[in-house]
Structure formats: C-alpha cells, structure tokens
Length: 426
Ligand code: SF4
Image (cartoon, rainbow, N blue to C red; front, side, top):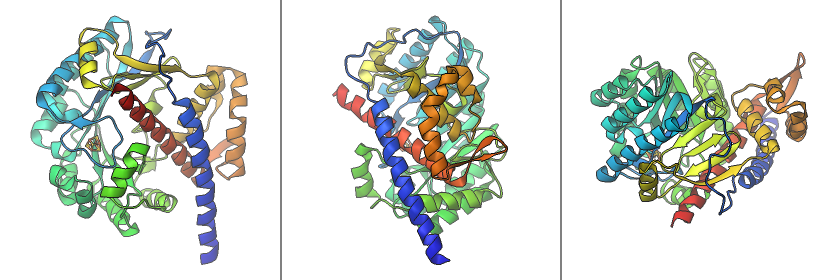
C-alpha cells in the first residue's frame, strides 16, 4: 500500500514536472515583449466595463521571496507617486474608459493610508465603482488604518500573512516589521466583520516549512474564522531564486503533497472558488484577472490587458511620475496576443476558477476556437486531469494541481517579464 502511494506521488511529481516545463516554455514565449513596440492602447473599446488595477510599489520591508514590483519606502517619493497616480486614473476617465471595480495591489497600498484614501476618492467620483479591493500587511490592521479603509469604501481587504510560524517569519524578515504569528492571528480575529470579505494571503512549499508547520498554519487560519484564504504555492522567479536560497534555504519538492493537505484540511470549513482560493461563501476569488477578462493597469510597473493587448507601465519611478503627471499613458511596452494565445489565456483562467464550461469561449472567439484547445484538452484527459461526467468536463483533483502548476508558471513568466522591464530601465 505504501509502495503504491509512493509510486502515485512519483508519477504525479513526474507529470507535474512535464506540465511545468511545457507551461514555462509557452508562457515565456507569450510574455516576450520585444523592444521597439509602440506604446499604445491600440484599438480597444474604452466604453466596455472593466476592472481598474492600481499598483502601489512601496514597502517598508523588502521580503526575499517577493518578485512583485516593489521599492523601499520613501515618503517624499511616495507622495509624488500618489499624485501622478491620481492623474493617470483621470487620463483613463478622459479617454472614456468605464470601470466598475477597483483592485489596489502592491507593494503595500496602505503604506500612506491617507494618500490611498484620497486616490480611492478620485476613483469613486470618476467611475460607478461597485467593489473596492485593497491589499495590506498585518501591521496595518490597527484602528487608524481600518477606519481610513472603511471611509474609503473598501469592501474586500486582503492581508499578506504568508505563515504564522515565527521562525519562518524571522527568516523572511517579516517578524520584526509585521509582528509574530500569534499577534497577526489576533489582529485578523479583530478585523473580521469590518469588511464584506477579509482574505488571508498565505504561501505553501516554503523552504523549511514542514508538514507540521503547514498543518499548524491551517489550523490557526480556521480558528480565526477569516472569510477567505488564498494559499499560493511559492513562486520562484529567476531573480528571486538566489535570495530565496540565501535567506530561506533550499527549495522543497513537496508542493503536490502540501497542496493535497490544504485541499483536504480546508474542505471542512471552506469551499474552493479557484485552485488556490477558499471561501466561506464560495463566491469571491482573489485574482482579479479571473473575475474580469480585461483590466487596465495603473501605477509604475502595472500590467494591463485590454482588447487582447497586454501592456506594462514604466518601471522607473521618476519616469512614471513625470509621464503620468503630465497626463500621458506611461506605457513602456505592449504586445498584441494572437487569437490562439487569447483562447488559451481565457481557457487557463476558466480552469483556474474551476469552471470547465467552454461554451463562453466559442461564443467569444467563434466555433473554430476549439482547435486551439485540442492539444491541452487531450493532454489533460490523458494525464487524468479531466474526465467526462454527463457530457460535461470535470476537473479532477490531479487536474486542479496541474492547473495550479500552469498558473504558477504563468505568474513566474510575468515576474520574469518584470525583471526584463526593470533591466530595460537601467
Ligand atoms: S511580500 Fe508584500 S510586503 Fe513583502 S516585499 Fe513583497 S509586496 Fe512588499
């Protein structure tokens, strides 16, 4: 029995490695934005309702595993940045764009909460916003920040916790800045009920994270009663690899095992709403790229996807502040996705959201869109990732894990693209 179980894990590990390699190859090709591309929003229809993404890159502490666009906090620079950000948002308004939801990510969006409040005021007075989501860190779950966020109309607050284990928090350099695991758990308990949704962002498969540490983290989460949990696998971009090895230790190969643990242990209290998001009400998904098939990216280094065109804003803060401040779209690179790439992108987002109904894809791209999906569907079927049930495609537990790998590689390719852009600015 034990041999069978070990064999099963090895087969899954081998199949997972093949999925990761194929996904990496495909995503890195799609995310290659050649130099010399004319920065342009192209021929998108501005009046279609979309999501507005706002990026605030400042952090008071730079965590070693993080591949987001983040920079050390500097108050003067940060205030100038927020001013240009508000100007950039108004540029979208002037161009006729229509947004119904806003998502503020970082970095640390709450790093100067009064600037965030003013910016969200501009957003709400410019567009008929129905939903406001903001990311924060555990040290900002105090009365002052929570009051400001409620005044700003935040519906959904997502807190970057990563782990409750104090040794891991120390290795990440988060213990001194954001507090101990028990303090964070207490702050989460106090913040519950103050927003429509309180989300806890966690990471699994961290170096030095044992099965016991993971189990304790999950039990702590469940005990807090938090509305929603997003459990990301550790994502190792090329540039973060050395920092992770130096500060956190060697990489673990227990991803599939840990993922199964998370699925099983959370299933008693939460329903999966995506491959790595678990909600009490089963409705919200942490990734705005799933809830909206198009989004505008504002702020330095933000990535947007409009009308099949993926684009990135200037990464250099000075360049961003200057260009956005004078009312221009501060886009540094863009790429128009081919029809096949767009179909595959939408297909991956559907799988990620555990939605295997493919009819919206043929409505959007025409009946011939199916030919772009023949190979991925065949491979998923062959590997046991999907099966047919009453004529419908169903994602199996193995299929969820393969989708998690594909999404991990998707985000890694985005992170590698960010590294490329940062190198271009220097
Ligand atoms: S993990 Fe969060 S707090 Fe840490 S550097 Fe990245 S964005 Fe900043």
